[in-house]
Length: 151
Ligand SMILES: [Zn+2]
Image 1 (cartoon, rainbow, N blue to C red):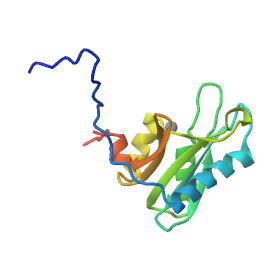
Image 2 (cartoon, helix red, strand yellow):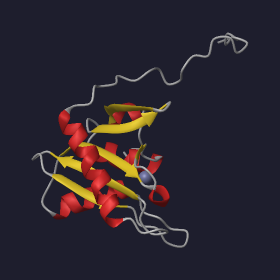
Image 3 (spheres, rainbow, N blue to C red):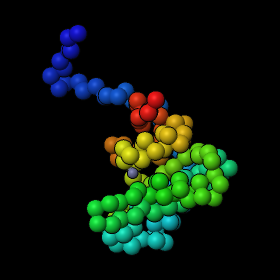
């Protein structure tokens, strides 16, 4: 198959645009929870990202990322682990917020590893992220087409 060249005049998005969903009051509460947890626990060089996950029960669980000499753990899995340790088995939504050097908080998109993890725990989990400077929400499955599967 021959690919058509567009000479850079018309750049098509790949993958195609996602099915974004509007943010709700619950989403704002989740963003607030992620912001609060990192504001309360910010430690330069150790914790500068917070995450919040809303479980199927509606409860919100929080976590902060862990930094060390070369091996870091993102805030999202810490929040999921906290939820699991408290009996939560299903998840509705997740968001991470960074507070680099104590500056204003901003939403952080999940890294590739976290996209795998979130998708594994629920392809329909809503993920709040940033694209082109805009806060968006989409299902985990839309953020990771063709996720890893061992079967
Ligand atoms: Zn991550």
